[in-house]
Image (tube, rainbow, N blue to C red):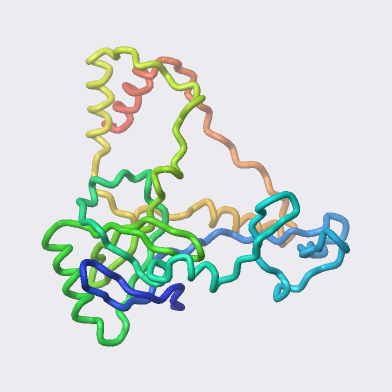
Length: 255
């Protein structure tokens, strides 16, 4: 794997030099954009507004608009000058229980690897977090942007779970949500009974991206000239009463 960041994991006066690696991969099926007429690929160009000519990547810079038509150009060195320590440090400033962090904040996992000479401090932090039942939470700068995250042991590795800041979460204002009206106890009890009937220990290996496989199968068929027929959809239940649907579900699971 190729590291995406180098710096230090810091808590108190302790500094652990580390490298950051992606801990997840996207298996998305990639389609090319083609011209419908002759199936030639469509290429995106960087066109200069002033002369209409294409601009090479090495001639592209980042600029922040401070007034109409007025820009301040910023390069990587300028970003680092804003706060050199933050750019190179994952700063742990508190320890919390992981179950205190709402799942709405979770964003991206990364592996942390110790640099040479940092293995003992790395193992010590992992062991201490495991024994204390805590995760270390703090901030770091990655790709010119500050992020929130927490450090936790994962097997014999430390992982960094990138989080969203609370200001980045949208509130459900304007949604047509149901009013908080009282529900019948017997209705809640039946729903809870159904939940308990289907409750089991979570095993992520039981879940697979089956839709991607189905799409690939159709791609192979279409590539061989086999016509694709639309799969039959199961008819949706017409029973409007949610309690009747729950009772039917219970009976089906009991059978």
